[in-house]
Length: 307
Image 1: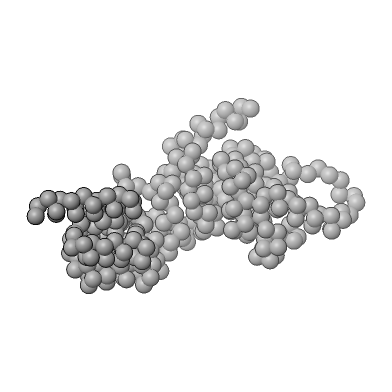
Image 2: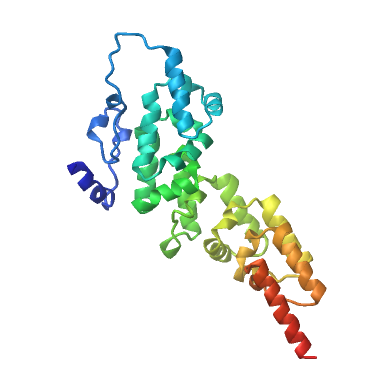
């Protein structure tokens, strides 16, 4: 009980979490801050008799089904699952549960990423938690929200993927009031060279300065998640050629790129053209369908009154 009472104070400490998982001599019994029970404590059954392998396999299948994980998919994508003991799976569940992920939510994550089922929490999950808490500075009560929003954080290398992305994003402007939150930590799983940098270069190629691009992406972080070829380029081409748009308006409303080209941008622009009306990008796109129709009616009435 004393450990549980000290736990929040330890997590909110200004000092980084100790990294016993980096020490090959680390003894899990001495590291209980996540209320996590070491694998060795899960079973004290006698090993004098040989267990029935078929029975053990069936127990795993039933366990996965209770978690809402597809057993066939899990065994196919993670062959190590066949040979690992059931207590390994339970240790992963307990680790995720200790940071606030409910069992109902856990199934979705483990079904999506079956490789997690046989991971070692101390070496595979705790370094991520340490990183999110002490480097990204996500509040402890929001860490599980980051993971639920982007489960791939759990299988991304801190050293090779997450930390380089964090450095790049901070240089781009995600600092101070624009620092990463549990809503935007999904950007960390992106490759700097293959994903983030090409999008910044594309926007600068449209005529925006580095500072302008920075202002755009911190206001609309989703810009860094869109495909250049399938999203950004087609929308910019339509804006420039069909809408005769001014690039300056994109600086004021970068969220333009987050709306569906076929589902919202094209049909609403076509309606404005047909009625001979004009609206700013924000007025045209940010309202609901009902709000857009009401705005058109209002403009039509004003037009008729002016005749």
